Image (cartoon, rainbow, N blue to C red; front, side):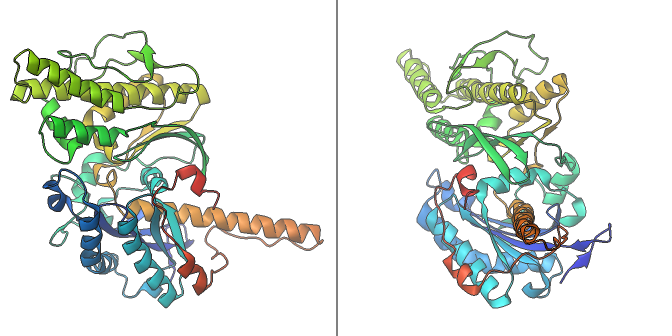
Length: 444
């Protein structure tokens, strides 16, 4: 059932399901921008004892939680039946294969039973489109159920929305996207909706993975990102010098009054093939070697202040690399806006350093509100809307070319026309891809 939006055009509502790792999430998104509901059942407490995600435990917990999460998301959006919607979207990769299967199989069943189109979404493309969502306080639930959250620490999604503002990206392209999460660190040139060019990626560890491993070395707790940030707040980042991988020395600028703010541009990316690539494995090893050296000298490295200083130095090294390479790519390709997304985009130092640098050069910067940085289904619904529209426009363009060649009139279309419906067999053919790159997946 299509409602009507403020512009008088049909409203496209999509149910989205996300189970790529350890968050069971469902959301209803309208027109790729408006969050009608957004439910997330977190598994952090289950995996905390292991210091990381235990894949088998994650898969089983998805099975237990997913029905309730989907039902609550539909109820929050005042959707009485799935058939009232326009499409169903689901993450089909990358991620943990067992976790992905839970979401994909439920989505296939719902699509098969309702006859709605099923839109498979790349998880990384979901993070990209988290920047296009409006964080309207009226569109998210204030009271998640037991074991659920809206993805923000210290408040509901609507509280986070009010604090952060919408920050929604514009329709100006090209845009530079920094995807930075536990499993991925990539620089992507977005030339238009659903049109990407991969500029660089991590050669080994992703930034989020490095945060988790360093936090484990320092015994700060899990998840590592928030733990490192909390410890670094009382640390002195200048006490220890850590390397900035795949960079070279650059012109130093005057340090900002904020003691935790990066003094960019202190580094420049290396020249050549790895100019826009990342590497954090060596940085993690440098922290380990530093700890061993301090222990040999008789210093208790896990003493509160020493651990805080190491955490601050590590965090600043990561931020210097991320912002430095992003700034270099933005200048090289003349982009009109920069978007940072993924779980690590919630890091306060990264946001402050990026905001300070891009404000200085007058380039718009967008970061999702905190509750949309980590895994959620709203971003999957947003990506599905734009991907569905993109595929539909290609279908109509192809049909128009054929009609033009035959001398017939070319049919006119609107972005809200329903594309050619796939058959039930197509739903059953949908598979999961545990290691699905963003750009390569666009060829499917």
